[in-house]
Each structure stands twice: as structure tokens, then as C-alpha cells.
Image (cartoon, rainbow, N blue to C red):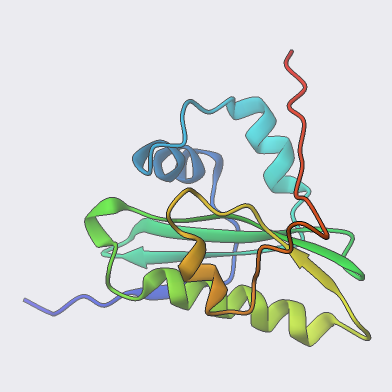
Length: 139
């Protein structure tokens, strides 16, 4: 029997991999048709595999120049607390840093209680000078 290790792969998750992780971390139901279009429009992505199963993911969306948004950083609850989220965010930030030719805005929305995780990478709440806002357009 060989010891399996975690492997970070530079690729986007498939729709089914994305759906499984999204639901595993409690983000709700997934609209797979929309997910397919969203993933296809991503700039960059990574997955973490263990024993040929995707157990972590993260991606970058945006214009590829000035604005980058870190999206869908998720690790299966069975594998959380092992540094995999750090591995994912560090790889996403390396990608953004390697493509930036000047100052770039990198944004994200942190899940409740996960703010400290992102603060260690320089992300900060800029209230009251700036307010993160979003709108959901329901169909």
C-alpha cells in the first residue's frame, strides 16, 4: 500500500467537481448550466486532488489586467485544517502577481468566520472608506 499525497493541479474544476465541493462546504444548491458558463469564463483555476478525487478548488475571475476576483476557494470539510486552503490561495496569488504589470485590485468575499484566513494574505475590510456590495439577479 502506498501513501497518497495531496496534489495541486493548475486547472479549473469540472462542473460536477465544483458542484460537489460547493455543496460540501454548505454554499447551497448549484445551477449547473450557469456554473458551466461561469467556469468557462474563468481566468485561472486550481484543484487539489487526493487519491484521484478533487477535494479542493479555487479560481480567479476578472479582466486579467487590473481587476481580479478570487472565487470559490473551498476544501472538503473532511480535509480542512491541513493547509490546503493556504496552498490554493498562495497559488492563485502567485498567478495574479505573475500577470500584473502595475497595481492591480484583488477582491473576494470571505465566508463568515473566514476573514482572518484572508487577512494573512493582505486582504482587509476597508470600511468605512469602501464598502463591498453585490446584487443577486434572480431568474
